[in-house]
Length: 100
Image 1 (cartoon, one colour):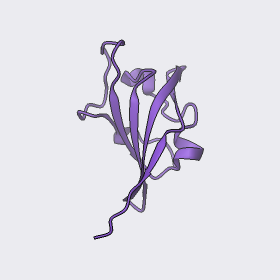
Image 2 (image 1 turned 120 degrees about the vertical axis):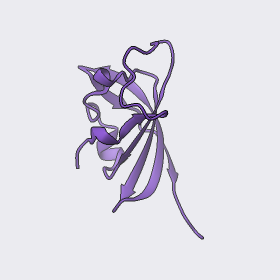
Image 3 (image 1 turned 120 degrees about the horizontal axis):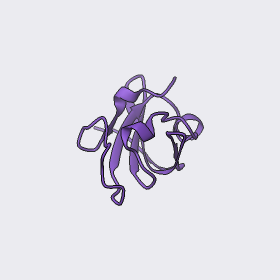
Image 4 (image 1 turned 30 degrees about the horizontal axis):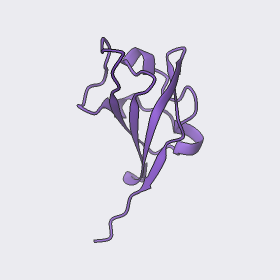
């Protein structure tokens, strides 16, 4: 699959954080069917990061899904913004289960 800008939002639901104080760190949420390790954390995957106000040090919560069902939550950080695109750290994974 490919990056889907419609599923990337700040933690408070905004599509963009332009004009923000660069000294602060923001939290972002992103949901995707793409694999974190081979796709999402690749440099340039979030191609419009700079235009949206994403910055180095921002936290990104990535929920990977399978057939629309959440499978894993990754907590990661923006490591670099190059030519407007983000490079995310590998992140820490939390496997999601529902045993009830």
